[in-house]
Length: 324
Image (cartoon, rainbow, N blue to C red; front, side):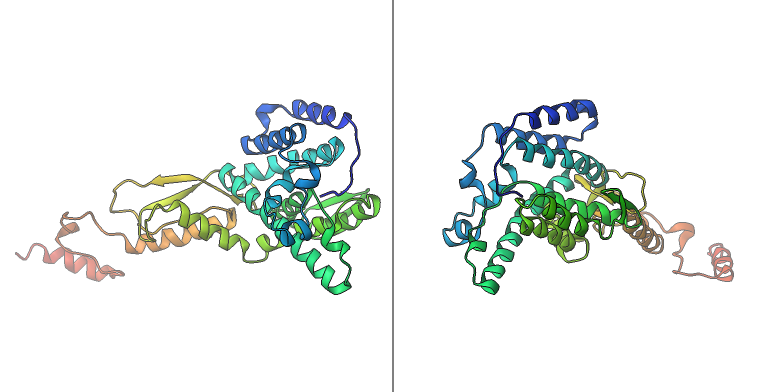
């Protein structure tokens, strides 16, 4: 997020060069669409910059809540747009391939809205603590708050990796905080509170309840009225191969009417591969012990096996079937 303005046209050319150098075919669809939307709204803004930026005064006092939707998608100048979209191009491509397009789009929508809300809460708290009304009037705009939330998420999936900040190695666990301070020092016109809001939203997802809430809401919306015993399920839309990456959902599917399969709903949206493997093992173990034969079909060998029959029980039962 930024709250100052500079003018130039070089940023757009550099962004276009970077996009074509990467190749349109190599950019996942949601990432490409969001990037295109930001560029379009920079060239043809939905509202003037001072009517798109978000602040406590405008959003809360004057009830102009549409700013929460407009502010992440508008930028102060083309350099602001370039730096944000160049960063998003890398982060979005990486995360969309890990999480899947639908979940990534869902994630971006929630992060964009929550970043603005957390920004308002932080600015309101600063106003109360300092009794300085300038915090409530500070108006921020840009996608960088969402980028900080995505960075926290990306680093969460690679906790042991190291990033280099100004040539110094920093653990991924702390790199977002280091960059927050450095950006504020090197570019004092940027919104420190807006970037901090993004980090907090990312932590709400990786270490707080946000991920569980999002999964529950997504499961409720896409269930089409089926309860947890329905045979609806969400399939994993792919992962990067790293054990800590996440799996997204690729839509609603209807399982075939096979009574040998479990009817318990299985949801993998936003789960890491480790969580999916654990869930698959649990489902496999439960299904192996609880599978039943098709309705109307005779029991195998003329009798039903107990849950854990001994070898002697099986031998005796096989002999008894000839008694009649």
